[in-house]
Amino acid sequence: MGNPTTGYLQARVALWRTGTRKSQQQVARALMVVISASFVVSVAAPEWMPLAAYFVWLLIAMLLLRFRWLVVVGAVNALAGVLAVALNGPITASRVIAMVAFVVAVLLVLLVASRQRSGLPAMLSEAFLVDLRDRLQAQGKIPPLPEGWESQSAMIASHGVTYAGDFLVADLSEDRTRFELILVDVCGKGTGAGPAALQFSGALGGLIGALPPQDLLRAANDFLIRQGDDEAFATAVHLLVDLEEGRYQITSGGHPPALRWDLASQEWTIDNACGTALGVLNSPELHVSEGRLHPGEALMFYTDGVVEARGSSIDAGIAWLQRVALEAVGQGFGGAANRIVGQVESGEDDRAVLILSRTPVGSRAIDETSVS
Image (cartoon, rainbow, N blue to C red):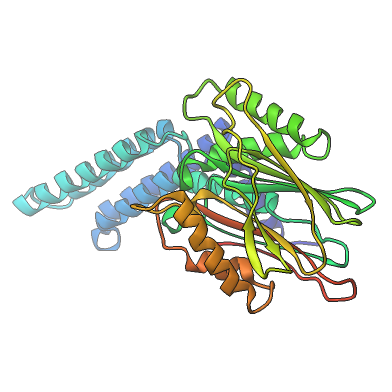
């Protein structure tokens, strides 16, 4: 049996994480009990409870409480701290300055908390963002493919944060003969695009594998149109592959053109599917291309953050990517996506690269997915 004390504490933490009124009341009451005890100690033995201790209770309250209860606890804490100083000797200039500084600190904490758009305490807001990141990363995992196929992806959010507007959703049929994926670049960068990407990926996750490619992208377009936001648009590319024959179909909605590794010419060639972005027009123009991957060949998909750079056209960026990708696969396809993304200059846009390659049956397939 587990320790009862540990179980009780775990239950209290789980209750706090719900953010309910009851949990906030319990935390606020506990803090006020601690502040009251600190005040008693401050009056009886000032050297054991200086004014600095009340700053600690203030910071803990900021981390654990919503704004409403933070105001209550902050007011009690400020009153206790100021009274403790006032009751412990004559009112000197240094004591007045200390009391004023403490009250100003309380007001600054309340000001910062009042601007929390989530309405959650600081620690719960952080937990929410971590959960958002984990869900996006989980969506980007490609299921293990049958022998003879390899997949790998690399994604980096703008400014080094871990919340990106680039994401992918994949589906492998139950008989493991049909593979689908969709790579999406949502309008926005980093944390600004994260919530929209999570919402959109959830919608696509319920549609992929259930609708034909063009119907899926049209449904995605309708979803974005219904958001009623001028900035609610995205580019997307859908890939459907017959894993037995190697035949594939690419359907693009405004996404940068895919690259195909041609074994005979030993170069990356540009696919012709492009189309218009989703969420802009009621009836988007979707481009479709078809082909067949032979053993030793591959398809590469990427977002515009990989090929867009200030002062140069996207065509120049694609030409640059062709050269970098040629060098990357010179060491073999394994890890190529990471090597390519590693060559992209740090910029203000999210970056993602995905490579699907076909290998001779019997060779060892490596499924690599990395999100940085």
